[in-house]
Length: 396
Image (tube, rainbow, N blue to C red; front, top):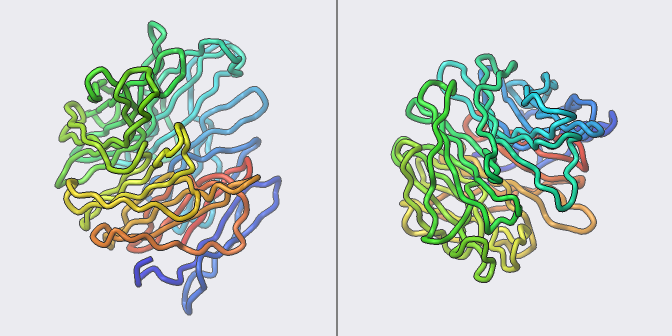
């Protein structure tokens, strides 16, 4: 952790049948916020996937399981990240039964526009049966007040190919989302990375192909933007389509406009799931995948020029989930320690130039996952995820 953030305090708020809990990250310093607790609203089990700063506070999105129903959900957080309220379900497609809808990414643009992306499973009952083909459609939501969303665009599954939008970023008057198409086998090695871009404030979207090695496959999991580089997406590629033999390679793509992308590989990794860019450089988090498909094998990459990369692997088994850039140029990465029987939250801080990650101490941590993180002020941040099967948020 950098000097300016050392000793900060983080508080967890979780909806666990009305039970409220708090945890501290480091020691409270004189004049620091003493924190508080509040429940994330919702009727069922929440999975919060992404968070972004909006006017007056924060907006988090995910999904909420209520019996056979799983709607996409949103929560509005206060400016300090201490209090949260459950918003209305995000609209979904008009399907028979109870569709399974997930919001997986969210970002804010100019003029108060907020875009969320995700997918919906076209199952009559909302329950996926083993061995059956379930079409997945990519969904795009738009809000002008950070509270009420309209479903503006849907990229429907066709000819046995699914579409999923995993993440979204904004820059240079353009929204760019990334994700994947996949055949009905559901195998990662059979996927193809995709991008969508919007130049009309998220009202309409154009799909773009994202390159993979010749004859190969892959998927894009996260995207960020900087004025110097443009849009940067990360994910994974396979050398041969639908062939697992050689495993996956962590991938990074760069685009100026969201339409044309250039592919490169990251060293010592099998998949990248988060990316952030600051004036100090770029940070990427993901998995080494020493064993095929293993996400509990965290890798943290840093670079100051997108050419030379430093890969850091923690001594203990961990799952990296997301990373964000703070206003002072440093980075915060979040995820979980893969302990049995339950994972527990973990967070790191680093600077791109040094490439060293320092653990942020979590006192009295409860089982849970940190899934996403957004900056707050110059050196603070807000984290969202889950505690057991309930939505949770942490803050400094």
